[in-house]
Amino acid sequence: MANLDFIYQRKSIRKFKDTPIPKQDILELLKAATYAPSPKHQQNWHFVILQNKKLIHEMADLVTKSHQTIGNLAKNERDYTRHMSVINYYTCFKDAPVVILVYGCEYKMIEYKILKENDAPQEILDVLVSPQSGAQAIGAAVENFLLAASEMGYGTCYMTGPTHAKKDIEALIGFEKEGYELMSMISLGVPEEKTPPQPARKPLEDVITFID
Image 1 (cartoon, helix red, strand yellow):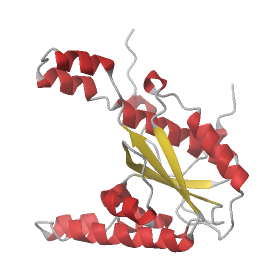
Image 2: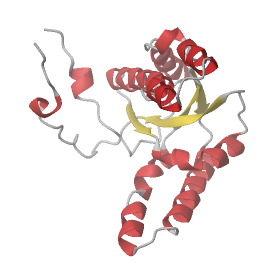
Image 3: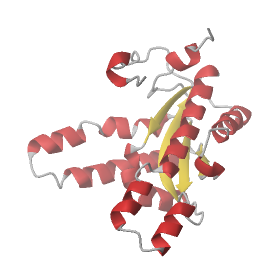
Image 4: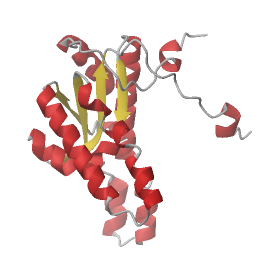
């Protein structure tokens, strides 16, 4: 049986040493990301690498501000408290030496075009796009990055929560690529010596079904 420890030992890391990451290692991880499967091989991803600490801190400030703005809309104290309780998870990238912003573009479906041009009902079109193939491609690329980083001894944290501030973040970093928008973020670095243990997974029998 193959040794899959690099999968089983991977966990989200939110505290990093102040150790620079060699550019060659970053490039190797990004190369691994691009070897992920993507529907119709559209490879609808683009990666923006941030290493400027000032910029990373400013990005965390934008996420905090956006998070607070959303929290202030809560109709009751319970919802407000629950929402604000995760702010540290949304901004834990602020002390990482590297942050990867993962952008994606629309997944183009010829079947959608054909059906739409033939006035297919909206419910048929909705079913067609419900698997969110473009987002699944992004997730596959991110997973390749995370597992490669684990194998190389680095720590990572995969985040989508901060994207509620995506417009502000996009404006801050000044990156523009037609048709692309921020989908997720990855913090990357050398883990601190003592980090929380990997959380338990659901029992395998609870999440699988064999159909003979």
